[in-house]
Every structure is written in C-alpha cells, then in structure tokens.
Length: 135
Image (cartoon, rainbow, N blue to C red; front, side):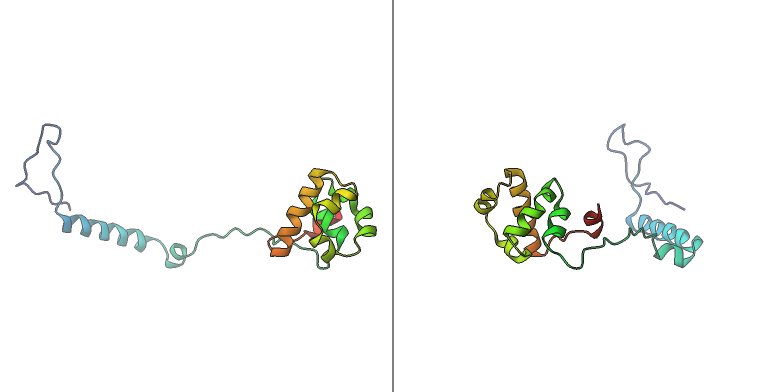
C-alpha cells in the first residue's frame, strides 16, 4: 500500500499526477519487496553464485634454454641450437644483452622478444607453459 501526500501541490502541469511518496513509506516498501523476494527463494540459492573455472595452466617444471625459447614462440625457437652452444644455461641467457644477441646473428624482432620475456621471467610475471613446449 502506497500513501501519497495530498498536501503537496504540483509545481507545473507536467508534474500533475506525480506526488512524492513519504520517505519512510518508500523505505518500508523497499524493505517489504526485498523480504518477499528473499522469502520465495531458498537461502542457499541466493547466497551462492555459479562459478566457472577453467583448468589451471600447466607450466614447465624444469626450464632450460629450449623450453624458454619455445615458450616465447614467434619464431624464436629457431635459434635454440645456436644459443645453447654459445650460452650454455638459462641464467646466462637471462642476463645477456642485445649486442651479444646481435653478434650471434639473431634478428631484431627475435632479440626484442627474448629480452622482453627474459625480463618478465626474472620478475616472476611469466613462465613458459608445458603445452607450448610440446607444440
């Protein structure tokens, strides 16, 4: 039941027929509608929402130069043999600078990718995925 104040007069013709509800009545109506909605549904269905989880990504356990470069992708994996012979392990690869990569004959785009992902790997923001290595 909605009570309308009859003492208020409309301010213009546009407002005729529109009277404001008393604030307490509006609040009571809101509370009653919320109670009716909550009363109809079971408590368990209102509190839980459906959760959609995807499978967690599987990461390579042991990361070496081949896993690192094939995890980057973008054609960088073509340089695996060259970098394994010149730079023997991953920690050395992670601190190698661009001029050294240039001396090995690695193109600019590949150097950028290697440097970008080596910085992310050092900060712990990226790891090569196991499925990228198999491909």
